[in-house]
Image 1 (tube, one colour):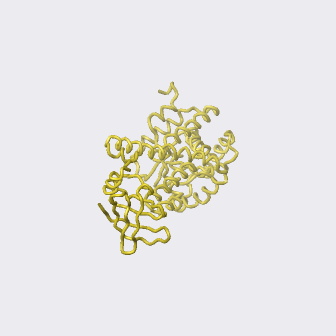
Image 2 (cartoon, helix red, strand yellow):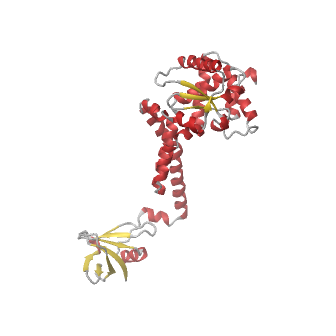
Image 3 (cartoon, helix red, strand yellow):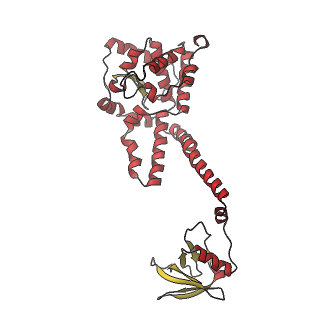
Length: 340
């Protein structure tokens, strides 16, 4: 009864190829051209068997053996009356246990990604100073102006009126940390759209203004975007994606994945698809704001329905519905009983 093993003397990194055997006196014999030692089996420590992973034998002199032949090692331990299968190995012998373990593992990973990371991101976002929002949003609009937007073509009077309405809106919200500012731009390919940068800048396109039939409709959209800023959704999304990128980098060894997000911050803000939780939070904020400021809630439903009607009829690369998914349930939430 013998097999090949790798011997490490514990004094250097040198690896020796040896023959491992067991004699009648339960002595573990280790033989090679340079090594000839024996140890009582009872004085050696054996790592438990897990599938076919090579096992270690720690010898009394602190040297180690690495044995790839698990069946040989089991036979040797059984001969010496020392065979004790570990809990993990016993589970591996039963496919039902193995299947349940796999399901638990997958569920745990899913829960960590789908629940754990968002919860941790929320705690982290609100623990960070508001200067973080300013830092992250700084330069984002300038970059978007270079690659996406053009200067607004709305008349100066119209722009001033919309910005004045926006400033009146932000006076009525309990948030003195963000420096809110409305920017109007020609959306070109992205068409009717609005997006919130973490610093408090909200960009609204000329196309969205042209699509509206009343300023209260635009106020409803802006209230929703204010909800995203106040709840720090952009920062939370950024943290979630960053942590996801780090996890991906650790799993794949791809360092590029961990840095790509930083380079793409402007497009992240433009094309982000907020989660259902984020949309519900922003909708709740908008509903409360509109109720407190005598703006009929159905204004939001009206312009969202109009956006839905025009979707697919233009060649826009993106629009408000694609970056803020508008479901029938969300629209119904803003419809008063009298309007149904």
